[in-house]
Image (cartoon, rainbow, N blue to C red; front, side, top):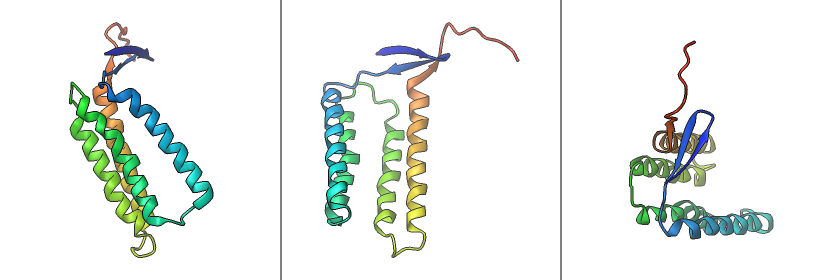
Length: 134
């Protein structure tokens, strides 16, 4: 476990196993390929886009398989499920009224659950922080 202090809080960066280093580079490669694809073929191959978005969203979760400590796994899965359910509305744009706005709500919910998991399981109050009353 690695620790660093951020303005009165300690950030515990967990050891996530051997997949973590490789996954970091894979995510950057997928993001670069996706950016290039959007630049040249924006919305030309809709099914391929959906598959790529799904793979890019789910594939990094494979790090879970090598995690020694599985605390916060429920929150990660709930946040991922929000993103995946939101994709249904993203692809239903034009068929379902306000589908794009509903998609944004699912993305916000997924991000909120993930931020909660980060706060709950990675940030802890600093032990040597001086208490002051106001």
